Amino acid sequence: MFIFLADSFLTITLAILVLFAGVHLNRKIRFLRKYNIPEPVTGGLLAAIIVGMIYFVGKVEVSFTLDARDQLLVYFFTCIGLNARFSDLIKGGRPLVTLLILTLGFIVIQDVVGIATAMMIGQPPAVGVLAGSTSLIGGHGTAIAWAPEVVKLGIENALEIGIASATLGLIVASLIGGPISKFLISRNKLEAPQEQEKPVVGLAHEGEDEKEVNHFSLMQVILVMHVCMIIGYIIHQQILAMNFSLPLFVPCLLVGILFSNTVPHFFPKLAWPARTKALAIVSDFSLGLFLSMTLMSMKLWELASLAGPLLVILVLQTVVAFVFIVFVLFRLMGKDYQAAVLSAGFGGFALGATPVAIANMTAVTKSHGPAPMAFIMLPLVGAFFVDVTNAFVIRFALQWCGG
Figure: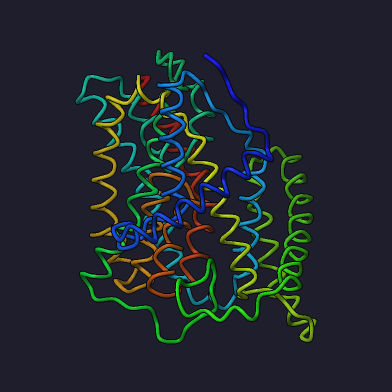
């Protein structure tokens, strides 16, 4: 087997090409637009299939250097922080708490479904934990972190199962959010609020005046972002020194929020990039490339030997997620347009990752109108509370499986 490793430069170049392919396919195929499938998902999945065919037919394994991908994620969440307003957060206090409670409850539901399904198909219950909140809400990082604990329960290929489950979940999460929101918006005849906000992520498909965007406005955005990221990095190092694990994007997100809600008040004449089209473009670019790189780098051949039982569990997890989102989350979040956008995001978050959730919501808002609070609430819930709660639930579930 010949291995071809694409360096960072080639990986980024191919990711841009993949993103353009997704944009082109979404424009040409009405189904993709109708059901709000994100453009990087379309291109990324196509690229992953092509890479898989090269592996199976040409006996060449294509690997990508993904150092830039993690940096793009920090860029993206810093943009989200710069767009946040304390007034929005205060106004969204009750929905934020409601979303948090629903998310924590769904973590438990996900593990119960995983364990029950695994036992029904003759698999050890610990496999259900891996194919539950460990790899779905938790993602690849959580699956890798908990795999050694599952190996102690006799599951020798726990790491492979966790990674495969997280990968399958990422694919489903990328595809489920748009159709859910389409169903809810059409069924309930929902529309975006009349008072239009500046774009939070991405530009609308039609009718945008781009005169505000130039090289100065883009450089201003990048400068402000880099200042926030430098401070966020320093804070992150202090957090790590206290033996507390937290993703780098979280302090960068918080610094962005703090700056956007203080600097414009102290320096009112200073041009600030919050909720500008330039920031929306940088945000959309970062998220699009991140997802393109993530999906095109999936090694589909590694799923082949594990796909059988995991597919059964994942199908049931998807059905349960759909029912929970449509009949519980959407209703308790207010049954309005913002709730429909959040439902698309929750579909991406519950089965995949927070960036997938944002991509799903972005695809919806590009077509139907802005929902700024959704882009603030979901990352906050995902960044602060889920990992800690998920760790306790996983620990309890594994202890039950081992007992």
